[in-house]
Length: 428
Image 1 (cartoon, rainbow, N blue to C red):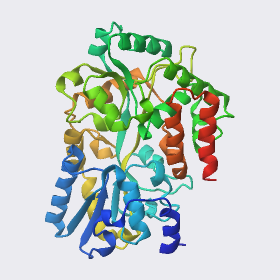
Image 2 (image 1 turned 180 degrees about the vertical axis):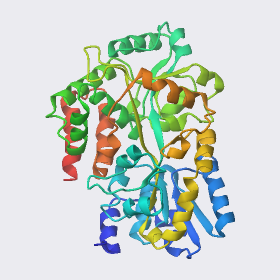
Image 3 (image 1 turned 45 degrees about the vertical axis):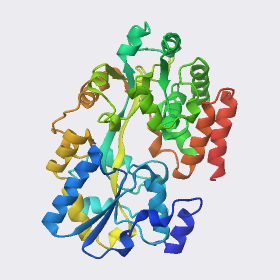
Image 4 (image 1 turned 90 degrees about the vertical axis):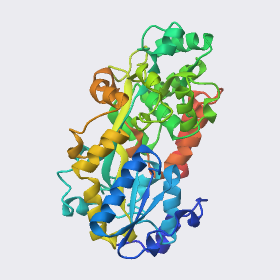
């Protein structure tokens, strides 16, 4: 049974501070020949430019108008506010993480299971990607469009300048490298301890000794303090923190500030996703001196044979709103154009997209870091469990607050795990 607007509003609006006006006119006020598209991709970026071409082509071919709301990283808050008022966009292009994980459950978007088949896209999207977009009830929250690689970047020029020979293979190697880098006046590893990016690094280290099933179960249900292998990983995190591996005051850094430290040559190491490969701040010289690898293995042996990185297909997907369901025929035309081989190829070649579509496997890669990631990363790393599909959406924000504290000196493993478990308990 479909939830009423009042029920959806009650589920979503609590705690949101983004005003409804930020959404523009929204899907609820547009006519039947206008499609409202809200995206995490913003105008003026490589992804935004590629999407702009799709919008122009769609209008030329159908005569329909597109209202594009490029709300960037504030998308989930802005969208949830608009849903509560019944004015949400028709299509949403965003990642599958944190709040979006629960959007089918709370009625913010409609399940895409039937549309995947009815729109003839079953063979156009990789099955493994589709699986990653299913919630805990088995419902398909969105159609996956872009995947990602999330390696650790190493500036080999700065490592050599500090007297570090090669990429650190173990955590003891990393601590030793951090000491040499600091002695040379270079920050070791930039990390966004204040947001989602630092949360992912923390959870990557926390699962260093845990097998994949244990990591998934712990991320889903909590109980960090009670899981011995996870606790061992948290203790490793505190050893790395206290050993000077992370930039000073990491708990105050955002993802953008973290990338800036690396791009400006202040930090020698950063954990960053493939979405940063095409950054305007990444010079050709820095790209040439960057080796993509993983986070070093525990020196006493962990659950993986090689350094770890993340990968997956939860980067950006297409979600259909309750308003958009009323325009399903128009939405279908737009989505099919988005998944055409020409469009996917353009996203790969101009926006460095890792495609979830089968039509993108032969697309031309122009970016040297994407080429390195696609061709070389698999041989260098093992892939850890990406938390986004496991951590409940309601837990995400309180967990980020807890992991931010973890980057602050003085917090031991017991207090860190308790803060995280309290985050799970706070949402039931």
